[in-house]
Length: 186
Image (cartoon, rainbow, N blue to C red; front, side, top):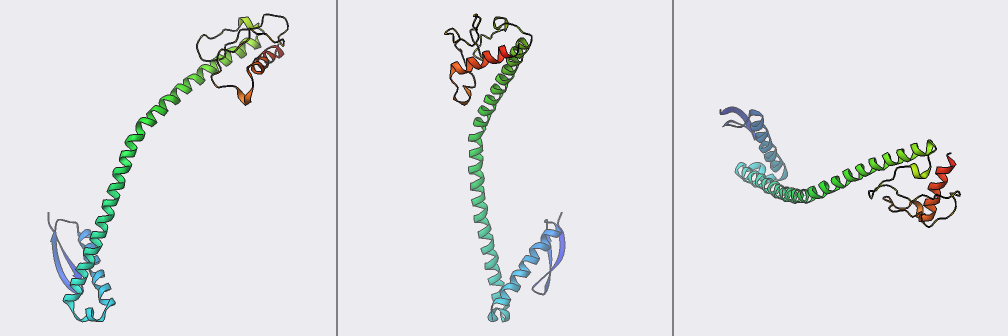
């Protein structure tokens, strides 16, 4: 449907007919009217010569158009570059998410193992009665069957520390700490 609208440009009335909305056509007319007034204010010769004012206005509008076209091309190039980068990052994000899920699962297993050990030690069970894990997760230790838990024993070697030793502790210090904590709670 075509719209008909009356506009005023440079003090002259025109009727525009187009498929664009009335608001759009009024905005275009106001833009052209403002450009003509800017050009007429800038030079005395343009004030007198209407055709020169219209030609300069057309050149100014064309200049604005080409500048916006260049900006648009630059933005499209940036958009394409960002889209490409996004496509490269999606597999990395998916991989990181999978690693995070694995770490959460391992943390859940370690928490369950810790609760199991704490429960066993709070019930006063001997070290041999605490269930051990055969997987590569958790802390597996061969326990000292001797009477002195503080005594150094070559049999007590950790098989795996999933999170590493904290604060630079040696394996022996870590084992002693676990034994102390276990027997001090009794």
